[in-house]
Image 1 (cartoon, rainbow over the protein chains, first blue to last red):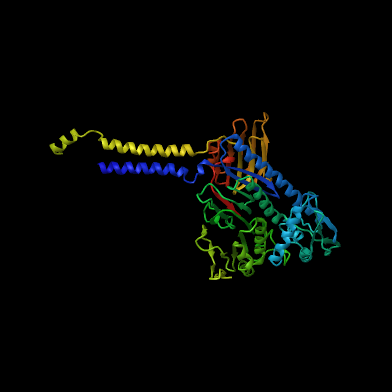
Image 2 (cartoon, rainbow over the protein chains, first blue to last red):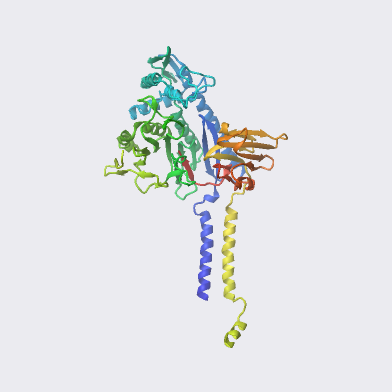
Amino acid sequence: MIKKLLAVSAASLAACAAIFSGCTSSNSNNFSRYRRTYTSFGTYATLVLEGEFFTDEQKQVAIDIGAEVEDMLKSFENIFSTTVEDSDVCRFNEAAPGDTVEISGQAYTVLSLALDMYEETEGYYNAGVYYSVDLYGFAARPEGVTRPYDRENTKAQLPDDEYVKAFQTLSQSFADIGLSVNNGRYYAVKPQTTVEVEGVTYSLAIDLSGIAKGYAVDIIDDYIRSESYDRSSFSYGSSSMAANKTYASDNGDWLIEIRDPRTSIEDDNTDDDYFMSLYASDINLSTSGDYENYYIIEDTRYCHIIDPFTGSPIQTGMVMANCIGGTAAEADARTTAIMAMGLDRAIEYINSDVVKASGLKITFIYQNSLGEYLLITNIPEGEYNIMRGNYTVACTIDANGNVVFTGTR
Amino acid sequence: MSQKKVDQLKQDRFFKIWDILIYGAIALIVAAVFLAVFLTGDNSALSAVEGQYNNEPVFYYDFSSDELTVYMEDNVEYAYSEDGNGLMITFCIDGGSLTLPSDYNIIFIDKSARSVAVTESDCSARRDCVHTPAITDNSGVIVCTPHNFQIVPAGFSDIDGILPVG
């Protein structure tokens, strides 16, 4: 009986110790989070700050940071939006071919980056596809604006080929944008290229909102870290994100769960909306997919990502691309480009020196000719978890660190 | 039963001392678990709430600034009560209707009580969301599974260490 008592007593003490030590081992319960969401660029953005928010003063600091972030988002929108009529982007788009347009330093920075990413991805990232995006009904416009190519039901009727080809040609002049700095003022020179359709002349129009969201993430992340919130995250619609550390784990890693791009149609009676997870901290990441904004005409999916080499929504079999590493702005451009590249070119890109040198972790899903969803990634096996059975890993990583495709095309 | 066994049973106490100690230890564990749960729950006052549909924000209401932000305008209709103390939000899922309404949840925000409740819905016969107690602090949550809709405390709340992506 004494043994029995000792055993139960020991178990009791161990249980109590476990319960209370569990409360304090990661110190997570000394901390809480401040979370605020915003509307910006037609989507939502989310700020998360973790810290000790016991007193009103401590809470007010977080609230003030949240308010400052709101002001920063408004200023970004006033520069990069395609719906704010006097934004830098709208003024550039409205300018005549060959005109020099004075732009803000931030617009200059983002345009420079967009041109760099155009070069790095060999034109697969191209911010000059605004008219193509608009032609297929995915662009944001200033209120009340109509265009000659508007259709009665944009998302049920495909555009005329004449427009598709003309706007694709126009987008190739993106690389000809001239940038200059003079006496601390910033300028962009619009290319001379024009196209004419049905008697209307069009010159280059840009849409920087994708990469600008990533840029906003980078700038806001710098700001919240400068305010000593290194346990924090900031994201744009959960597609572009800076994830610092969290108090929820001992090593500061977040559990990052990547949304299942086919949840809505692959009903396997699960509530799980995510197909892949991994642990990471102090990273920037971006995700692009054909599930974010799309419509279907005659069994063909038309999404908001334009292939710069066809002028139409991508038909590459690419379903989703995720990039971890680099800046959020770079990651935005890279995932958009990968979606347009298609399987073989995307694998070439993953294996390129620039990706390896930057330590980027890239994952994408490709739907093959059999309708299977194949997952290709340069993240080593064991560092991620696949949560859904309808995705098959279809690659290996060879001795040189190159991704080798092992699936069916 | 033998006489010997009967005598032994008569001599036995109802509880032996070791049994009492064992039961005491079990009670201690139960009390410890209760205290752990109670002490670590976030019972701080509600500062803001967020409605989420398919894990994306539908609306956000901040009690301090009395500010409502609507993210999915096509899915949301709202009206303030005459005394200005209440805010009624009608949310319908994609494919539902705000005018009928159909596929909807009606949410009532009581500003002075700092509470949020779902008062009506056509989600299912059980209407679990309607019967869920109002959210009054940062430990509450209301989930409507058929509509893939939930209301969660926003502003200050517990950390969870999870970042949804994509």
